[in-house]
Length: 319
Ligand code: MN
Image (tube, rainbow, N blue to C red; front, side, top):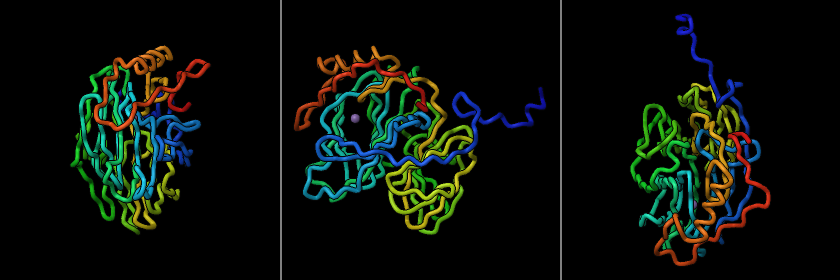
């Protein structure tokens, strides 16, 4: 079978052969978050639920919150996932049921691993910067690790890869030989890319990963496609490099990973494998068990919404 050694393995995108790189622009939808913040939800969206293990992408701002409380998300539970708070402007005070109390500032990694159960709150500090701009990202935990103990990590210093006109800061996983210190459970990439006006670069990427780019600011082209802030360009698998061009100074987030082939039930703030698991998590939160308690938040915790009348669906990465 030595002849096979001469051929690269066929690119695989999930359980299907890759059909080649795609360019699918998602513009998201507006969703109110807490009382005073509106976010653009890019994932999950119609026909595209995941990019690697990234399963939830909200973009918010830049919002002028000079005379407003800003982000105020009361204590709520999570299960089966990791959350990443990623800011370009402003700061967020994180509290959780492990007793963590941490201010997360722009381009610092606040990574919460819910494992089997955690609860947390997120708020703009009382004294805050004028603008709030960032992304809230979730990573699904694979079945082998989803019952792990909850944890919170804060990494203010992250590795950086630079090229002419480009700075890439690793949020999670690996890019071009650099690796984030954040704990991961599946092969993935999350990177914050800053491009100087006029920069043109081919970023080396993993052929077996699928990728998407979330545009944060400025005007950039990703593989020839103009991306506006708040939009997500899904790129599929099968690339060895990704052409980037900046028309103005621009920032984008690169999200990618090995296609996540486990089927999930996602509802509210929980990820499970069956509807029964989700219903149990909801009951436990409503009864005040399992998810612990967040101390110090000035307000009451979030109540879980009612479960839908129809059974929750088990879904794959596309749909
Ligand atoms: Mn949360």
